[in-house]
Image (cartoon, rainbow, N blue to C red; front, top):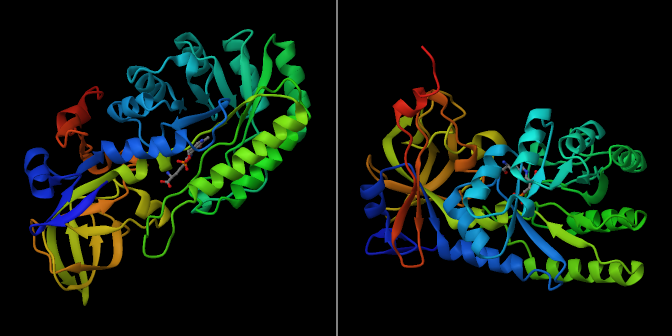
Length: 410
Ligand code: LLP
């Protein structure tokens, strides 16, 4: 999101924060089309091989209006539920181009996605492999392999080693035989080591590891290295993920592998956060300012039901005052939920704030709205997209209390 402080207030991609709050209310998830398109383009040009594909991982943000932009930039998409599949289809993706990344999926859901036209499915166990091939006779499968060593910003998002994900590489021959017996075929291999690393080394290690395995199986024509490339949430401490360096290192490996093996499979990655995180912010309002037991608290209307990352992972999001400037002092920015863990940011230096002031929580485009819940009976926030024309457009209405009741039977 392009942010600028002009005439005493913050503007978001050219729109005044106070105007956005007045027009759409708060909390408000806001996205900047220009930033989103730039991120898509930097990934499109990551590797110049035409057999290299980028699947946007829709779990980071499955809003259809954003998926449409991502699709128009030429990124493919992955989905992991019928809901994500439907959102991607609504955005214009053809189900046959999507990658369904499954984890502990029911027979019914495999049936549903096969019916919807999905042909590429990544499976996570031998049982899941046979369920998928029974749902789609003669189908193809991608095996998610556990590379034993992962990376990520928190133990909860490291997805290799002693975790529930992936298939032991020793089981690949058995998976191939099992697929053949069901009239299908194992055509792909995939790894996803975890989420949010700013050092490309662990990822490149996993790339080498998977390429070495793929070399042993000539029928493999799809090799997917997952996602995980991070963004610097704390810009004062962290540097950006070195996209160009990573791209060159990856391309060199893929080219060397193709030269050595004489094979030309499709290579893929599945980034989520990198595509959408920085295009989004959450605009929120200060509801109370107080000193409690000698500690300063700034109470806002953004609780962990709507942005769970700080509470769930201790994640850092930069918080900016949108309607005040000047000398700062330390305060704890908290939400409006009935739990003491409901922090947005601890010990933040912010100008003297008053009730009604607006704040901006940065980098909430990924795993912000998509992880929001209705805990404490609150309807989830609205979302707006600030387009290339500089206009803000509502892309998701705020949920009403009545909508929260609509599936209840009483
Ligand atoms: N592929 C697979 C199989 C995944 O499970 C994920 C993310 C991705 C790709 C995309 O990863 P990314 O590029 O976004 O790191 N809620 C956490 C992140 C969870 C990631 C889950 N899987 C957070 O807010 O940090």
